[in-house]
Length: 546
Image (cartoon, rainbow, N blue to C red; front, side):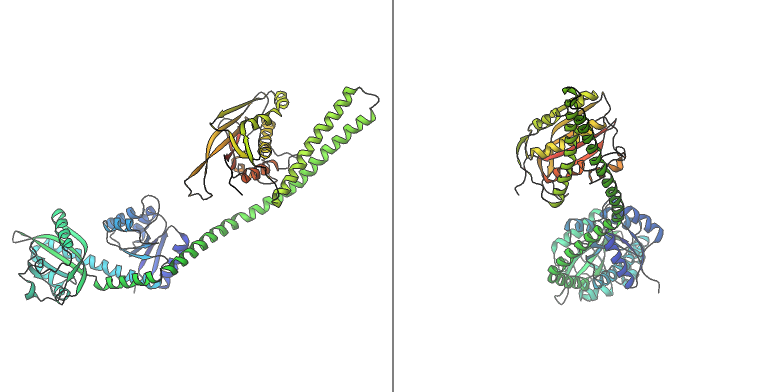
C-alpha cells in the first residue's frame, strides 16, 4: 500500500523535526518541511502531497490564513492545523474560508492519528459530495440514483421544508422511515434543534444558491440529538426550485472531540508545564548553537588580543619610563650648566610623560576593579553640558596645536542627570582624545547634546520608554571598518586602522562601555557618510535605586 504523503509547514525547526519523526514512525511519508506560505505553494505544485500539516501562525507574506485559502482553492488538499492554543480569531477566520481540522501543540501521537484519519475521511466525503453536486448540475434526471447511492444523508425538499425525496442513509441518520417524512415538513417536525441554524441555512442558500458545511444539530425520532455538516444547493425540478441537502454525520467525531477536549482540560496544567519546559529547552539550544558557532572564533581572537595586549602594555610602560629617566638624567647632569628655562623644560616633559603613564596605570587599575566588581560610583545630579565643557577645556592647547575646531551643539530641554560625574567625564575625555588623535589638522570635531529615550525594561518587547540624554562626538578622521564597529569596545581590541606596532592597549573604549553599562545606558560607534566616525552614548536622566 502506497504511503500517505504529508507536507509540513512550520517555522520552528525543532517542532518541525520532531513532527517529521513522529509522522515517519506512524508510517507516513514526509515530502518536505517548509517555513513560509510561498515555499509551501511551490512545494505542493512540485510534490503533490496527500495532506498538509501546518502551523496557522506562520509569518510572512502570504500569512497562514492566506496560505490556507490558496491551497484550498488551487489544489483542494486536506489541511490539518497545528496550534499552540485555540486562537479564536484565527480559527473563526479560517472557518469562514475553508473546512479544517486541528491538533494542539505539543503534538501527541494519538491525537495526530485521530485527526489525520478524520481529515482524510472528511476529504473523501467532501469529494463524494462534490461529485453529487456536479452530477446534479450536469443532469437533473440523475438525482434520484445519486440520492439513493450516496454514503451521506441526502434529501430533496421544497423551500418550506416539505420532503420530496430522501435516501436510505437519511432514514438511518434521523430514525424516521421514508413514509414518515415524504410530504411532511421538517420545520414543523422541529427537526432543527436550533432555529437560527435553519434561518442561516436558508439565508445563505438564497444569497449564493449554495451553502457549505454548516454545523447543525438535529432531533431524531427517538429524541436523541445528532450533529451533521450540512451542505445545500438549489436545483430545479419540473421548473420549480427545490433544495438538495447533503448531511455528513459527524456525531461520533463530535463525541470524540468533546472527549479529547475534556482530557486536555484535565491535563491543562501539565501541558502548560511541558510547554514552558520545551520553550526553555528551545531557548537553551539556540544559545548553545550560537555559543558553538562563536566560541572558536572568540577563543582565537582572545589569544591574539592577549598577546598584543602584553606586547603593547610592555611598550606603553617601558617607553615613557625611558623618557622620564632620560630627561631626569639631562636635568641632573646639567643642573649647573643650563638656564632655569631649560630645566623647566625637562621637568615639564617629565610631568607630561608621568601624567600619561599615570593614565595608563589608572586604566589598568580600573580594569582590575571592573572585573572584580569593585569599581565604585558616586551618583548625584550633574550638569552634563558643563561637564563636557570642563573636559573640552583640558584639550585647548592640543586642539590649537593641530588647528582643529571643536563645536558643542546643545539641542535639548533638560541637561541635568544623575550620574558619577568623574566617570562620565572619563568617558567624554577618552572619546574626545581619540577624535583629536585621529582627525587631520584644520578639520572639525562636533559634540552634540540631545534629548533621547531608552527602553524602560531590558526585554526587546518592552514598548515603554524613559527620558534620556544622548551625546554624539563626531570627527572627520579615518573611520572604522564596518565589521569592527562592535568589537572595538571589547577589552584589548583596537581598530585595524589605528593599530600600530608601537602603542595602544585597547582598554579605553572597553572601560567606557563598562561605565556606561553601569549607568544603565548604551554606547556605540558608526561611520559618517562623508568622512570620519561618530561615537555616541545615551544615559537615563535618573538612575534606579540599588
